[in-house]
Length: 635
Image (cartoon, rainbow, N blue to C red; front, side, top):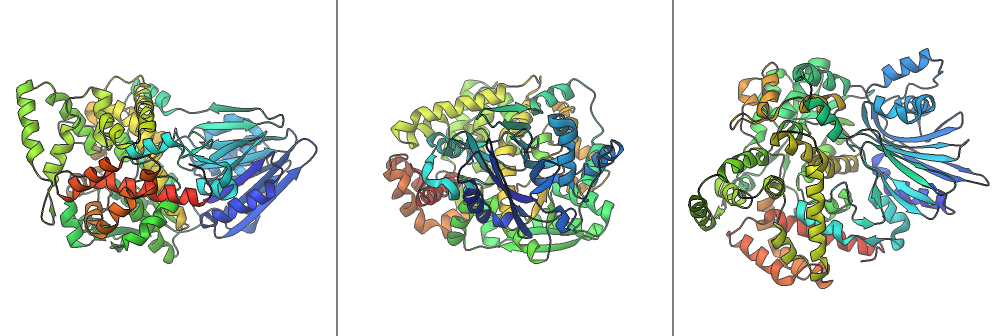
């Protein structure tokens, strides 16, 4: 796990690379390196920061050059030993024990046909001296990031957006449509970038840059195709597939730990890893009691203790009670783009605590909810489908009652009224709109009323993009259509993005065994009716888990990997919300309407509406905007 940066066909390439690798030094504190090639037709400059996980020797440092090919590679190839053995049979002689060299030699042997063979998470750049061509490639799900910006006849690229901003900030402009998308989703989707002209290399794709200035982008893997193929076949044996994936994700030359919330997904990963290697630590978080009351949060740490005690796993508990006023600006810088999910703070603080104990690799249960229908929104949308068939008078009466219910009383949050109000925002909508509204922050009219007049058209574009992504499938059941959309939008744009940035800010690698080629195909082989049975979610995964975990863990109520957001907004941040937002640069620039901001804040503080997520996202976006402008990025 590392940080990569590079330039192609840039006169100032080495200077740019030095600036970028310095900005992402946190991704690789173990070593650094750069490499250049210039002749009369092509110039390439590659930079690297290393976090040593596999083959800890200096021989595996990067940029890695061999027989005319040079690679910088961020990630882990879990099947590299199998591929290495196949290449050895074909006559390849290896000089290291690294997976980096396997990627390079696989490309030399098979070219782009090597990419579907790779099981892992990766983003890499590979330069061929003979052809003068540069290849950029990214893993199927986009677990590892890769930003690139066409510049002149070539390009500049890096693992993080902040590296590009540090290198060429004054050339850049903020992309207003991406900010509108961030407001809707509370993150910037993979299909957009907060900086105009900068692109995220799509997961499952590779780009080729040629000396003559031409470039092509091709896909080697699409989750929609995988889902359609899997749905047409027989359901897979989930127990076998998940055990295989966890075992595969344990390949490393350093110790491995895990996140353990005490929920189903993290417990599966922790216990299967413990069964495979025995000696494993786990990390969990706890919150202040007063914060839990206002958030109406379950005590996850109690379940984590039960799992750890039952299986003999060493558990480290970290209480989250940060100085949120000072931590929020830091998180905005860490996250690269406006991401309004406070769960990133949990990840950062846990990874920092683990790193202090010498941990470099942590397993996570991320991805199971998206693939197996585990989020509350999935069940809520299925319930809404039935609710919409009730008589109109019944639905109108229910709406009037729910509108009058407060979401807080004193210092205690009311979970069910909060859920009921949320449910009423999408219960009568058609499928795609219902799903979109079940997890986004605004309906189209409210979002259009919040943004400035010049951005109203962007709202329509963002909504249409969601509809196009949701409808791009050949699946015949609603549950799996939601799971597919979540995999392409929610998991890729939010969960994988914040996990990478927050963990790498602490110089820690997070691995996600559920986000795996084989697991994904198995997940979409399971019909939706076996993912949600009545009100039981992730039913097929729970069936498999009964062979690994006690019933009280398998069937415990769903708890999100969240944070006491409402307590932070109502208490810690209360005094600054108005100043930062109502008097902020976005409002002054006309991108947000002042009166709409004032109403949104007042409704939340009075307990009439639960707008904590919206306020947190807007605070994050305002601070990101100020940070970008201070780096010379134009509005």
